[in-house]
Length: 96
Image 1 (cartoon, rainbow, N blue to C red):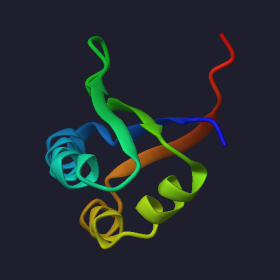
Image 2: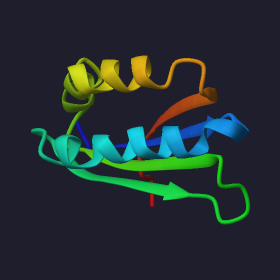
Image 3: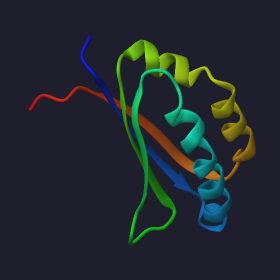
């Protein structure tokens, strides 16, 4: 299978931006060390600081599935419960 790209959009509640950002930053090093992770880059919108975006590339869908089952994602969800307004994940394949 070809490389899998993931775009994840996370929108924090206006009064929870700092909490969500701190918890997202905790995911970086541990995820980058996972098998199959090519890159895992976090971005914050310049005009809407409550909007975060992960741009990720994985060697395979299996690598992504392993990532999704790891405890650090469950810990993120628990730590940010009620602080995230919207969370969408798109799995994509580069075509050009």
